[in-house]
Image 1 (tube, rainbow, N blue to C red):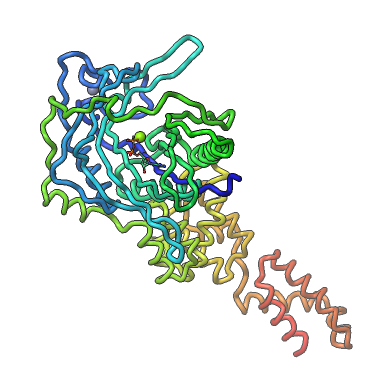
Image 2: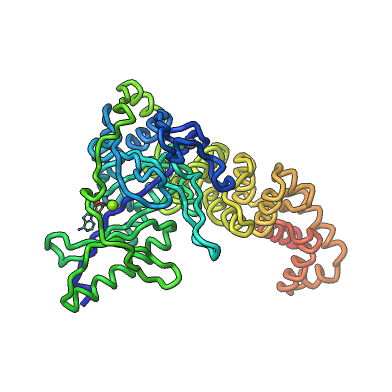
Length: 473
Ligand code: ADP
Ligand code: MG
Ligand code: ZN
């Protein structure tokens, strides 16, 4: 019975830092350049080339640590992790093993009512390896990524489901993008994740775990976890042991496959990196970093609920992404109804993004607020609001002006509507006479004609009231 098992998950997440240079040389840290064009003797690992540590990586890693509530150590060190693989020409990776930069933080997931705290054991700095592509012509090696600065963020074995793992990753990404530590583009590999997973009976000690390497989308994290849970449960049900090993998840088959037996740290012969001095970050540098951290998503979410009356879901959606939160916060200054503004953004504006295959809304926030206000005050109906929004996506402009120029505004002016109604009554004297003779439902026909005269854009309530006033006069 698979349902008898409790799943235990710990995540190791690699995040590329958004620096100008690679971590130990002067090559640029870029993505998408032609293979092997951003390399030098140091990052290619040529004999005799020595690393020089760029502090911009240290500052970003420390900022990540502070944003994730870690203790950031003023003193840390680099170590050598020895292994051979074609993507690592030096045959060792410079990382932090014995003395990592950050320890003991956390990420909160879930809602205020139903919150769970995921512990972060450590965050360390290290260099990325190159990239191998298997092609029909053979193995292609691109060393551009060698020496790109990474942080590895390790959680405690605190997660209990695929849903929690994805919620943690989403929150982590949100915080790291907010703080400008990384762009966290999973499709470009700047955020990738290893899943450690074991099963146990609730209350029993931790079971034997396997590790699934290098997952690069939320969907594959979710599917790999479910596939591995099923694989381990079947073994345990059959009375067979789970073997500690490193696995690869195959998106095509939806299965996990063995890559190699799990190494122990002894296999890597870690030792302190002799080519680099110890790392120091001062108390005042840390305080300055602390001050540079913007208000983070959880705090913004509760602010939006408290101050603007948004529901928890909408508030969370808007707070999750910095560009979106900043757009909303500017627009809400001039919005009559923050809730209507949020609905416009999360509804029609997001639909436009999907339709256009774009990532961010570039319409000026004041224009969004104006459009929302026009809808709230009934000056446009929902169909025209939608049309105006689509036009703003195409070519941002003043929505009032656009609506006027394209005759999209609702006619609400009392005198204007009264004039039109009078005109219609004059032209339909026979109908008016029969209404006054007692045929009440003739009013409907007259209303239709009046609306027609307004080309469908009249405030219907108002027009009906005025028309009846005139008929009954
Ligand atoms: P390693 O360095 O060998 O990968 P760590 O002890 O650093 O091992 O743990 C790596 C990750 O595995 C951490 O996120 C940790 O929480 C998780 N983990 C450790 N033991 C288990 C277990 N029995 N089941 C699930 N996850 C585990
Ligand atoms: Mg590991
Ligand atoms: Zn280089």
